[in-house]
Amino acid sequence: MAKSNVTLTSEFLKGLWKENPILRMVLGLCPTLAVTTSAINGLSMGLAVIFTLVMSSLIISLVRKIIPNEVRIATFIVVIATFVTVADRTIAAFYPEISKALGPFIPLIVVNCIVLARQEAFASKNPVGRAVIDALGMSFGFTLVLLVMGSFRELIGNGTVFARQIMPLSFTPWMAIALQPGAFLTLGFLIGLANWINAKGKKI
Amino acid sequence: MNLILIFISAAIINNYVLVSFLGICPFIGVSKKLGSAVSMGMATTFVMTITAAVAWLLNKYILVGLHLEFLQIVSFILVIASLVQLVEMFIKKVSRPLYDTLGIFLPLITTNCAILGLALFLVMKQYNFTESIVFGFASGVGFTLALVIMAGIREELELAEVPQPFRGAPITLIVAGCLALAFMGFSGLI
Image (tube, rainbow over all chains, first blue to last red; front, top):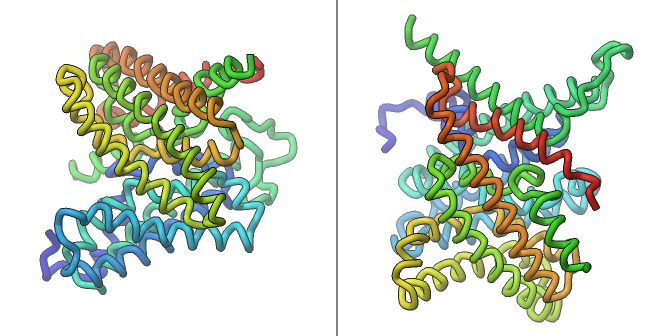
């Protein structure tokens, strides 16, 4: 897996673009599609994932040597589910409106492929520092895409970003972009765009 | 009548994949061939129906009964994971042909967020036992429906000339967007 000559900076940066969980690895699409109806929803979901992924990676990396190989997946899931419960309860207590808007998607971080995949592929094989940096990079990459999608859909579907009016008032919002079809279309074009940029970068 | 409404609502109007965005990973991953889409759909429907029953009982008699609601997420995911394992062993023993058809798809179902989503929805909607089972079955049917439609379209897409960067996931998502647009037409049916 990770070689020791890989610097911590590149360990962090790979999550943002080269191995971006959504754009490059196409993981964790359900929350990406469902919660990006507005910028603030996308950002809150991203923060919840940052918390869960970083804390789970920290714990898993700490105990990686004492987990028997046969029950590792079950162990990961219990650890992840614990932190998701913490995040879920916290959001429900302090930000009830956001909790309502995100609906079941905070509890569903448990089965988010990104979180489990990072434990399996990285945290269970690497020392604590590296695992946390990797988790930070991955979850920031995830949050970034969520923020971009949320802002775009809010802008086109409602004319605002973070509830602030951006478009001129004469602009007619495209409701469909804020609704379900828009989620699929926006993400489809975003991944297509990322592929295109990547292919172009390789040619030069 | 009420049960029929629940069925139509869960299978078509609030279609898991196209309206509620649950189970997108298998939807993108397993929709390349019609045959495997049907098998995956059947396996998921099967597990969903059983999960609905078990999750309802677990929630009613253990979590609410003992005031342990905060353990909901942890206990649901553990129950689902062991349930899938159990179903797999059971099918292997009882019906070999069925196991060969569903086989590799069963373990994948554990990480399908549609299953955990179903359990969470059940609690939120406060259905009774029969309604829960109908809801679980209908959700599975809706999932299968979306998966099969998508697989049908993707088999045709193989022949189309899609621009290179859009091959694979992007074009699938864009097609799904068009499907979602069509399914929006069903909203307000009930």
